[in-house]
Length: 352
Image 1 (cartoon, rainbow, N blue to C red):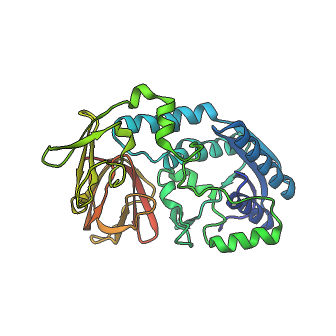
Image 2: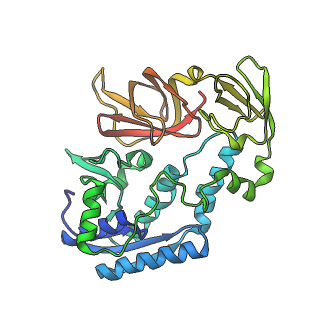
Image 3: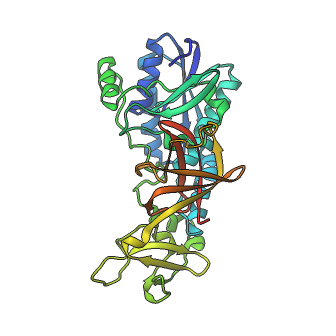
């Protein structure tokens, strides 16, 4: 944190990280305002979350505001999630939520209430050098969440503080215990918060059966039929289990063809790709001026970023060519590009 303490609004969830962020800011002299965004969930889950948030703000003696965003979240995050699966894509709703919901409304609230700064409990760092503010990976490599924030705009970074970016999760837990924060561990950011039982297939089938009831054939790369499937939404690139194919060597999902309702499978060695294409690329930082920049790309949250070369195909369209082929490049997922620990930006992966 390299800003001077002032008024700041903190996005609270009732969980450990956001609560610790608010507590640390108050300790450093900031005038903290809590903001809780009410998102779709069961009545009991929503009630428990609100109870937890109120306990934290009461403990810290800070004001709390709540905004009901259930309808907007459904339109901006859940609808695209469902539409993506109906098109044979594998979406990442957490990346979209941070862009369309969390940071958007955090910034709006700050502007409407003349609060100059905002903060979240993400494990990322915001570093300002020569008047330019950039997003960097968090110190805790295992907890770094910069991948999920690849669609933030530069303006929001200028006024956003990330108190946990230079800390490890272990240190955050320790501080929370020392301060007696009445918060609890919540699911990690890679979990999809609006799936009550963590089963996206059941969620899709219960919500919009007409858009995802697309049964068809499972074929190999030569077009030979190996079996049948009961909906393309049940499969994602790299999937091995649940194919129902008897074979001495395992098959993996290689491609999803929504236009013909076909699932194409192949052997493990067929899953590797040298290149990945992305569109709607959001530039957080300018490209390095060096002719040989040390760039790496990450194709999913748990993917270890791999080195390669970035090529521009348009103002918001890119191709990243890996030095070594990478497994299971998945259309619909998000691509994040880094120079070292500095996030250059990200876009949505396409077939080409």
